[in-house]
Length: 116
Ligand code: HEC
Image (tube, rainbow, N blue to C red):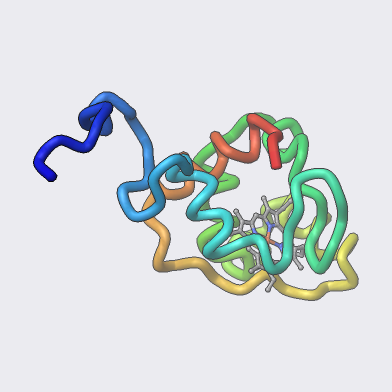
């Protein structure tokens, strides 16, 4: 039982989550950290995330700051942070300080693609 067929091509797949083969890093981060409160196209506990970047003027650093620590973005006076907080009856999104900036970029990429 030495050969097992097709051979490994995994190294060629960029951004694949090594712990969850076949899933992009962004999707796997989303399932692990966001799924319980967000869907892309439907409001659940948190708002639907489709179109997020347009609502944040495509400003990745701003939305990254919000995702990592929404309370801080609100207290710093970010207008979209305040608005989305008010729109959701001021139920706060928990801080996600364990995520790296690169994790958030992968998450935004997944949200932008809009596939569930
Ligand atoms: C415990 C529930 C919860 C979890 C988990 C959660 N969120 Fe949220 N999220 C919310 C709520 C509630 C709001 C709206 C209120 C607010 O702004 O705090 C929100 C708002 C947002 C917004 C603003 C959307 C807009 O239209 O401006 C983004 C972006 C977002 N979340 C992304 C994420 C991402 C990415 C994750 C995973 C890393 C995540 N959230 C995890 C509850 C959650």
